[in-house]
Image (cartoon, rainbow, N blue to C red):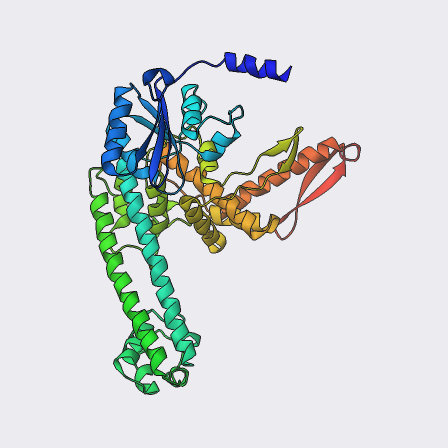
Length: 461
């Protein structure tokens, strides 16, 4: 009976992409399958060299293929994807998990043939990939993030070398790569060993006294650790040079024609993020998408750069804010069986935009805004990681609304949120009291505060 049902469902499928091809991507070779009636050898193998990729595209054109579905891991698919897209093919990078979940595959069918069959019946969906210009910006933003991680490791190497020499500078100065820390470290590498001479280099804003800094700079000065400190400092400077070059490339990429040439309206006065580019990134991002995402509390220019470089300004690929949040991996899980919710845990993912939004949400803890009050309310109801994910989900929906409607975000303030929350609590209490045959009566206290008194309906006139 089950076999007849499956056969009936297959018979009901119609060809939606009759000119589709399937490609199984590999590091050294690619296997390609076209419809069986297009060639005497419908499955072929092509090497991953550029000349072979050109022959692959020519063969697909000769076979009348206009849609290509490919499955891959890593970055092996990118050269072929870009080549086929430039040749006019509709290319879809499909999720391997989705392909595996489709039942009915025979054991003698190759991966590329199975992809071709599923794509012919419209059973596959392509992964999200932004426009070519956004992809270029995304590559630069990811390169910049990699350089920042490398530079942070250099700082750790500096601190390790100082600790091995028993130089306790990190215990009296909060940041060893700040102005004071850099002056002291470079003087040490240059050969200075006197603690008071080094302590005299401190900035006036350093709270530690000169004597305290001098005592922290009394160490062993072993040659091998000084060598490690010198190399870590050189690597830190080299990463700084590469960061400056990367920022210049990002500025050049953002200077291309955009939607608007206007400048964003004045927002909240914020100090420049430490690792932010030196140029006016806020204006460039505003000209790119037409809205100022930094007006949303918790989102600074670096967070806005990560989000826009990952998704771009065009939201047409996402039908709603729910689809957008699902792609980010910030929406609750839907593990349901028999109408019962088994788990609402958010799925794990390595989405860079979602990671940036989580960091922005965690920064709302001390924000005196509506979003800050919302995040603190969440923290009082659930543990911190769940509250961060929920707040990041809200930030994602706000970003989607701004990009789709083109409106500017206006913060209503912490008091506005608290008042709205109080109204919701009162409405819920009144509804619950009515179900119990009671009602809520507000009583003004001498201190101008308002308390609630629940009285029985028959006892109140």
